[in-house]
Image (cartoon, rainbow, N blue to C red; front, side):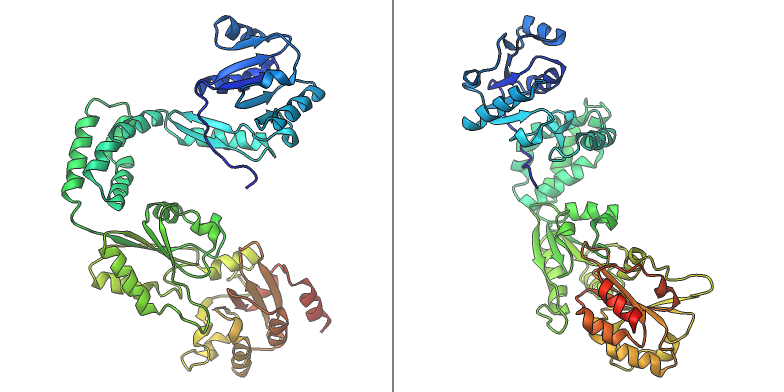
Length: 468
């Protein structure tokens, strides 16, 4: 990020504003709400700022700008319609090591004003690093609609009880769990509705109940599917539980853009496996899930795709149930569906495909697959974890009657920013796959619908395929 979002205590501290028009007034209103001491330097004042002067809310100096007027300032704002004056203010502030905002002039700024949602003491600031103030305002409007008007009152109520809760529940995970339940529970609902008369009594009862149960460590596990990689494909339920979890056990291929949605103070444990190198066995992962939950923690087991589609989620569910541990299963968009959609492949299509089968390529070398059924012409087959098995899959399907000109598509790192899509024919697939130097995760789609794939990232290879 280009700017660090921080909240600054300006109470009784000097902020100098150069300019006395309507634009300056808008900035001054924010500064006054933050209890800053505001000095305005300008030959003239707009009517509202003149009223502020008469009310003693601002210090007014009816002068042209000079660097000496910045003495003692902790922030400076330039809000004139004269570029040369704004530039001089920016230079003078920088020379003094004082942060400066030049309105609507990003290159001359060392700080910017965000769009603000004010539910004091709860404040939400939205910024676009100065690239699009209009977009920031639109996002602010959307957030305004989501946040209850009395949310600030709820924050004040929680602040009053913070020390009492800390004394009653000294264990941090239990305290966090209490607050999570509080903000979605009846006490908070009553405060937000304006029914504060009995809120303190209800809070005492809820805290006593939590304190009595504090010695009973009772954790739970969330088996969460997070989709093929794009964080925008996360379900709302997945995001909610990621925010609640005390510890995150995640696979190797879950991207940081998704893990970043978890609580900042949650412990992260990478239990991922690489092909042929299983540093963490499934038994180890199962044991870790049980141990973490029995210690009273909320554990998020985070998997790419869907936990029950080649994710071994079923095995983990069985172990946890046998141990008597509560489990919540959150389905995700399985990689086969997400990758096909991203590449523009309808897995079933009238006249081309009447069925679709998901197959794990890790078992392709064994004798468990019904290759004759997979070689049906009006049938789409999606092979998961296919990069290392391309040659064998091609050989077996051709052996069982699938023609060499059958369309195929390779979908590498689907929905990720560096996604690559290649379409070819079954006979030419091994050559192109080796030339492409595939990386995990890669899915292989075989069937007439694969011809509809939109090629990305493999343009040269696609031209070679066409030339062949």
